[in-house]
Image (cartoon, rainbow, N blue to C red; front, top):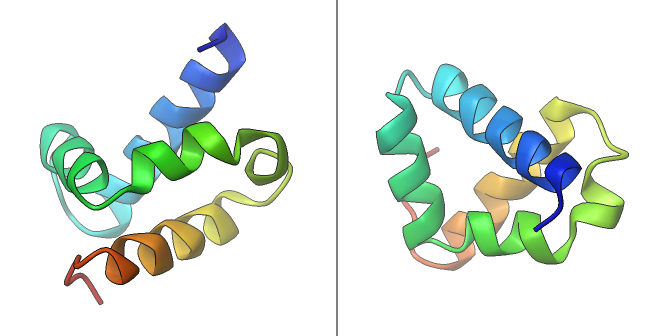
Length: 71
């Protein structure tokens, strides 16, 4: 994983945690468990061009499709 991808992933985890009132560890674990981190890694080239709000919406859809229950 390159440095920019790591920074972007950390930023997304932080924004996700803030959006859903989670700790960073809770957000990381949720995104890891339900495919969000894999999605960010695989789709970095497109996702990092979007707003953080759009990235969070995409993460929610991915995680819900993989069994996550956040609304």
